[in-house]
Length: 448
Image (tube, rainbow, N blue to C red; front, top):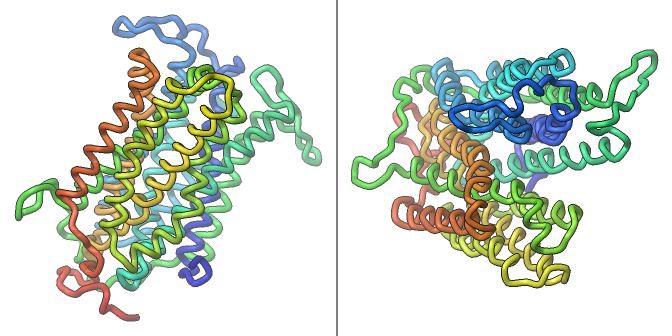
């Protein structure tokens, strides 16, 4: 239960919620900011790069994707360094400072190259923060029987922040802030444009997160200062097959990619179903809503019944739920309630599947992480998720040229492959966690 969760985990969860709200807010605001004319892109749009014509949409997509790629590829590095130095808080706090300063820099940049640089710094800030944060959530678990619940609570708050960011952005936009209008917000004697006020929300999110971490989060005691000498990530198991953490990481990559297929195809999906943006927004949010509701109970159940059953069930549900999103527009009549309703059901089922994979998957990595290696081990999964989310829009945009079914059929095929990987390569890890530097003492018997 949330009320019985370690206050430090709750503090990290709330900090991540505030940070995620600010970042997801920018996902909505940045395209408007670039399209508003305040960023000079006229000389770039229409240019040729290796035979490819640069469009405004591509330039906006590059800005949004850059964050994900730098964040994902940076996480194994920062996770390993945090293991090496034996500290987490400095990385979390440093990352929040970088993210906040970069958010505050947006009003002062005018060129496209400069906005790319600012977005890159935000990605690096997230790369500093994420591995250290999930490593602390793992380190705070005194036994395997707490780990799934901790990650369930953490993911729930993070997703609440991520889900509310676009809602807040929508309220601001509906209030007159858009690409053609720059609303002035008067705060005492200070006048802020709508865009500047929007960027201030991201800065406030980082500041709130910083304060929560400083006030409520401490470094857990470390049993062995030299525990992080071996920080390699295995691809193969010495006994044959894939390493369990790597296998879960690959499956997580495929799962995250399926999550990101939907948003890019808003216009063709709405046209095929004969629906408006309101219904699409409800369908888009269904995955997040299901996760917010289910992350905590599934995390607790994974602590009681094991990780593997939920991973297997999650990917078994993911396959048909992803494929259905491509088939519903084809086999329903546009303008009727059947199409939008079935799409909502498919999205809810995908959310259930993601919830059954996410917290138990992180718990698997936490179970197998040796003392002092949480940052390195867990970064395999956080990097995989970030890469999947970054690649998803590119994959769906490319495959849409073969029809609306193609992106979702590809996602379903990847989900099926992930199911095969989990069934054949992932063993139950509940009760196998370690607390000693040499990994020989089961975490279940460790007591404070």
